Image 1 (cartoon, rainbow, N blue to C red):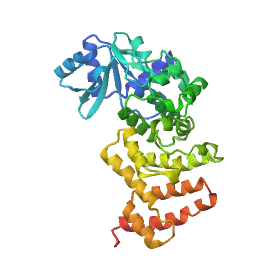
Image 2 (image 1 turned 90 degrees about the vertical axis):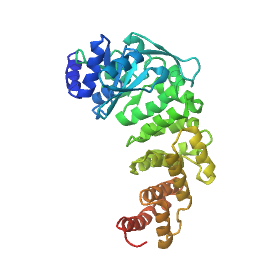
Image 3 (image 1 turned 60 degrees about the vertical axis):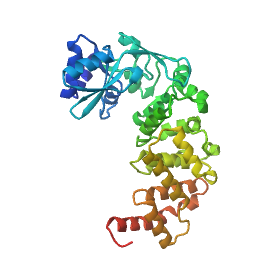
Image 4 (image 1 turned 180 degrees about the horizontal axis):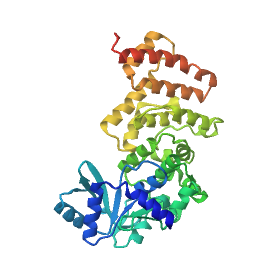
Length: 382
């Protein structure tokens, strides 16, 4: 297609010297090499391209041997999945060998077999938008499964039966929520039906992979559509099985407004956003510190992330409900200037679930809190 040729020419301008060195090294050894997945998808969706993933029929040991000879640093990171991290300068690239995946038990790691065929590798991929690739030899975009049509139609579809593909690996449901939100795509009805049938029985390979995919989702600025998908279909219940979710919130007449208001609260820390999501959908009167202890068992958080989650919970519990300037000032100092405003807005958003009138107090509190935050930032006496 002429359109793919033109898009390929445009994409080729994004290839930096280090990436070209990797491509040429594999080509010199008569191996196939394609750029696939996120980079091509993001480019076609009009988003900034940040990471380039390379697919090849070269085996991991060959990649390491050939790259080492070219002074390209390598580090095996994929284990049996055959992914090698190649580092050129300060940029790292994932180089993956074509593979076939066989799931014998849902929620368990698949059996992996390395293959020589690109078609065998493509068919294992989840969403059609993730199967689009760039051929550096022809400088063309290659789309064998109709991912480009999905982008044009603002839709999202899967390779294979969604009822099987989503059950194989629960991460695909979280990834679906991220793509819906980030690229403004609407899932096909059979995907929505599959997500609903899976619900809280969703299975994941490990707590580490849940954390990585969930935090990617939480970094999307406007993630309303994906958040509604995860909550209303009880996927969040499956990720956090011990958490006291408020199931009645699904019947809240202003649920979409609640979520829109939440997404308007700006914060760059995904753990802070996670805390907000959990608080928004919880039965707050049942919340205990132990519930947040369980979260570290459900997803593999670092010590720093665990500490931030606990600090946010304590700050929320100690929120000064009387408009006493001294109490508010003391609370701001204890909470921290970077999170006090966020916790305040979350507190009143939870009040909004029950009464519009109590939500009106938010601006009065924020005015006082911002005043104290400014003083602390300017180093004025406490």
